[in-house]
Image (cartoon, rainbow, N blue to C red):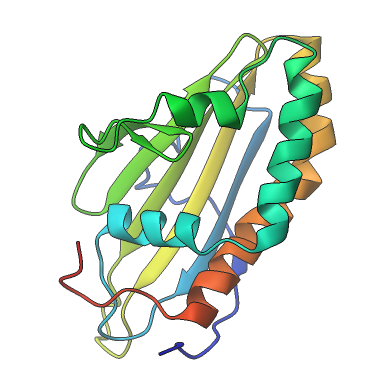
Length: 181
């Protein structure tokens, strides 16, 4: 059953996130948060797998276009990274490499010759007990060269739309319940 549609808000990068101070310098750092309904899972990995499985169709199309362009520059494609995925070992979720897990946060990302990025999925409780907590998706990017900065300039507006649309879609479909694995 779909949950009540909650707004996705641009927020400050959470200080408790493992990615907040990861890079000495960042070329992009943003965070988007959404309130979770009471009874929703608080497992960041469960929530991220759900978000990835419920993305709007146009994101897959956009990823395919991105892959076709970046392959010409010898950069890693999402399609290639997905083939490296070994769900049994849990070292990747779709095309994202898992760097760390804790009870409240999972850190994913990738390193390439043009840039490195990390994505944090942080679940924080609602201390008032009136809601199910907050899910914050943060991204930090460190560019290595001009190609990285040019690439980031081109994809940053799409990145923001993808994150917000993915969170909205997951909320619309209905978040997984507590205890879901």
